[in-house]
Amino acid sequence: CLLIIFTIARRKQVRNLFLKVSVGFGGRDLIFCGCLCCFILMILILNAGPFMMDDSDSYHIQAVKWIQEYGSVPGVANLHLRFGFNSSWFVSIALFSFPMHGLKAYGALNGVLSIWICYYLLHKIFYPDRTSQFQGKRVSIASFLVLMLCIFIWPMIRGSAASLNYDFISTCCIIILFVELFNGEEKLEIEWLIWPVYLFTVRMMNFPLLILCFLYVVHLLNKRSRREALTYFFGLLIFAIPFLIRNCILSGYILFPAYQIDLFSFDWKADRRQLMEITRYIKYFNRVNPMFQPLTTTANTPFPNWIMSWFINLFRFDKLLLILSVFAYVIFLFRIRKVQSRSLRYFLLVMICQLICWFFIAPDPRFVYGSLLFSIFASIASLPALENISMKMIRFSLTITSTVILIYSISKVAFNMDYRNFLTPHKIPVPAVKKIVINNIEMHIPEKILGNWNPRCYDTELPCLYEPDPRLEARGKTIRDGFRIRNYDHYIFKGGEYKMDE
Image (tube, rainbow, N blue to C red; front, side):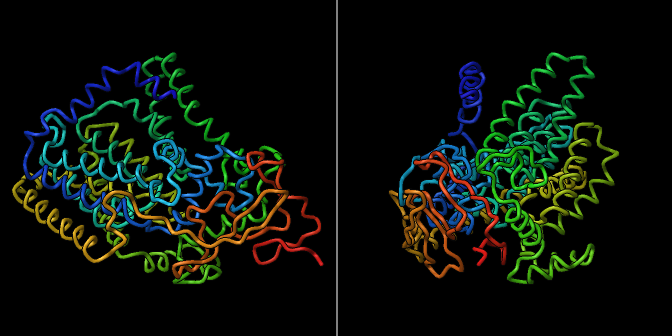
């Protein structure tokens, strides 16, 4: 509501923004229009097809359904700990998608995001800002490489379009911040305040980006703009406080799943020992997937011995991106002295901080695609030798890429019935369920379907429950009252779950 009010108050600027995007589109370069159409076609086909991510099937859809149907329910994490993973992106999806039971309508916002970033990067390739401290051609080449990586590394544009993935919005926002920074924004801008806080509420892994907020506030104080600094500080609280409150409602922890910060004693608080178990699992799962190496082996491998196992078992596209990124950071660090922009140096420092924190907390590359792409863009945009590359070569490469994407899109429709969704999106699978009653509330336990290794809720009617917990009880007579865990003095914790002490 605050954003809508702000939009109405700044309606002239918003109108100018849309005009800037749309005016003269018909007179744009034919290759630009053709490439954009091919990219949009691919994204539409993937977006209307089946979900392609386990997490979307397991808890992303359920998280959105809870928001749409019941809002914030106390102790919903007690049904399944992953239901307590709070994200502003799920709230956005719930707000901007119509609940269509049984149809894949939940992924619409991800599809829009994928189309938007394609348009943005294509626009930077064909129409770079010539007033930048870096020459327009270098920005075009850097944008081209970033776009190619976003297309061919599956979890980015293609994976986002085919799931409810909430990591790609972080990648997109970071891309926008650093591309605009290279486009000549010498001074710190308010975007350094808004987007880091928003991305923190999308996924708490983005907390190092909050350093940008601190730098901007210091910048304002140095200008002796104390009133402005105070105004922006309260603006940040407006972004962050609802997220923190909702964390407490869903799980009882203000920074769930960080059980170490335990400030409140709500009766619906998620069980601490199970929370310790899942955080341990998340940490070591992201080092080496259990399908490649047992979790106990990963957990018992000290630093730095686990680094080799981690790298060997990464997907090929992630290995490629990491290798390119390491070389790019080295190149850019050697050239940073020649960069006059203080803001760019600050941004580089924050990206390095984010990578260090990510590496020791949960080193899955998809969490930091934005920071990895930053180094590649920065190193290319700062190399004068690239001025000799002809734009005709870039245009030819884009034409070839768009042709391949068009063939890929047509083959999806021609050879796979799941992608022939011309009027309505793909139907979400509906697993058979076992029904149990807890305090007069009917629970639905899904069965395994489609050869999945685990049961998944998909679009199952709420509340969906994976494993009945003997300690689970309702807090009231309705679902909105929430759920809690009874006193577990008479239960023993064994094998990651509680059982009655016989």
